[in-house]
Image 1 (tube, rainbow, N blue to C red):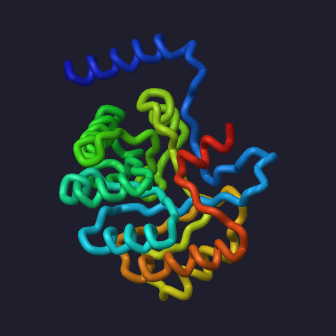
Image 2 (cartoon, helix red, strand yellow):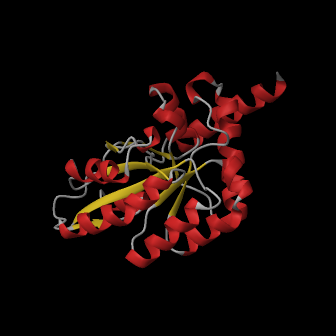
Length: 228
């Protein structure tokens, strides 16, 4: 329809305007820091929140540990829990876009993907007064064409992960901790979900053990800065 035509015309014009810019967003799995960095930085990331009771518990635990993380939030939940998002942002955590209601993005048109991102950006903006610069596709489901659209048109860094705790399968806290630590190397992006109680229990233990091993935690965008 006409709306689609206007949407694609905008994209075309945008391509022409930004072709010379060269500041292109990227797709990341792990985020390797510049070689001269002596510190061992990793990123804890949490998908599918905010959760009404578990996310505040997690934020409190992180505050005690003086650790910052990244929350990839769904727009529909951001609308439900703006004050939780506000608290997270005030504490220095990064808020990333995990689209509106968790569809498989590769099955949608670019116009529908844009709507998913836009509605989520709006909800995050209303809650925190800032707009995300990073996105994680639901289920990690994406492809080359979609990544190109997300990085070039939406101008978002696409953040996958390099270490999956598989916490959504509801293993015990001990198993989550073990999985997070056994393959931890500098640049690791750890995938968790702040919608499972055992994950919330595991996080302080992961942080303590990682600190003992000399690791420090950054937000995703802080990690990306370290690549430049």
